Length: 150
Image 1: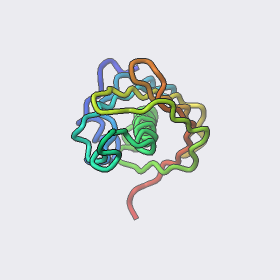
Image 2 (image 1 turned 90 degrees about the horizontal axis):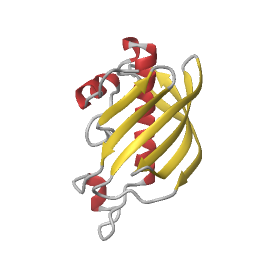
Image 3 (image 1 turned 60 degrees about the vertical axis):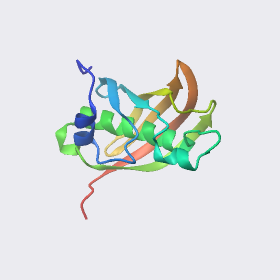
């Protein structure tokens, strides 16, 4: 397990995402080859709230899934090492996705990912997103790690 919280600067070294599409603010815990816990502070300043929905702002489910993928990608980098920093993680499958409770401005979203398996550059994770220990969303995701250069 990492000894301390992983801050946003280290996260940006680990994964290529940037504002406005960086969906995690810090990593609270990483157990290499096992699990990670990410954190997203959801604020009214998020650009997607302008249209989703102006009178009842709700974080889009697709972006909650993206926060799960980014937390998973950071776990992969921490597991495999620096040679994966900045590589792209492409979704191959999103299975059993369920959205149980809206995520709204002011919420602190905790993203729990657990590695289910990996074979070469394909990884599978079980993910949950919670606010105040209540599950808001869950999914199984499969992703492939790819070199971002062409």
